[in-house]
Length: 376
Image (cartoon, rainbow, N blue to C red):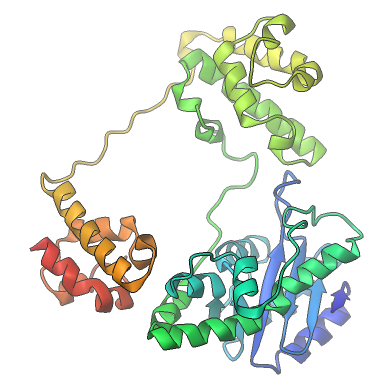
């Protein structure tokens, strides 16, 4: 294992691994700890070497060799649960990967009951991963030797796991299913919003939509206050005060510190530390006129044809039966969104089913005839 923190060492490492056939890739972020999420460590393993790349020490333009590696079609890139890694690599650096193998997707299609990396490595490689660093703060420097060892293990064992899962998929006749899914991953891009830029994000807090308009106004102000403190202190917002506490204060609309002490979801330590700010936000919400209060827009649900739910239940029953026969989770064989797209399209034959963009070719091969029969 080598720690790479200069552009020269990075260029040399990437040049050497690009001569190999495949690499394992992972990233570590710190959204559990920091206000602004970003990649704080990159791990890359070839069959012969592992590097931990420090993107805090190497400026973004000098990380170009990593982007070139990911975009190289001659080299297979092995991830475990690539979805988030691929999105943040796009968000932070505009890097896009091709020729992928995702061990989580492979395990799902192999019918594995436990698809976490630790469980799979224990089953297929006899390796027990340490768990104490799963939520570590990867923004810290220097990283401790146990953290470095944990990060290196993530990708070091990915390649033998990949080979074992490929063998398992081949024996089940499902390797082509996985390859189609891997190809879909290449188009993943970041679609989220930056912290603090979504003014309606307070509405997504659990319980927000049950508040009266005045409570919603308080929650909006409290959410903005928490966000500003989190940004100033560079901490994840929940580390300032939790969502349940914010919603409970918004529901109670306290007028004094004594009122705060009666809110069960608000720990007394947070009431002492933030009491003035909480009461100030509530007082400002109480001072708003009715026309200034936020109101939830109840969007009308799209009209479904009369037989939609009946047809959906029929195709779900068929999907569930075939999934059980194959030893797969029903949602892995075909998710609800895909089933709904099929029901809306009402295909009458395979050619029409192939025009439904949400459906994979392998799903048509395995499930197509049964779906068509259920829709007749």
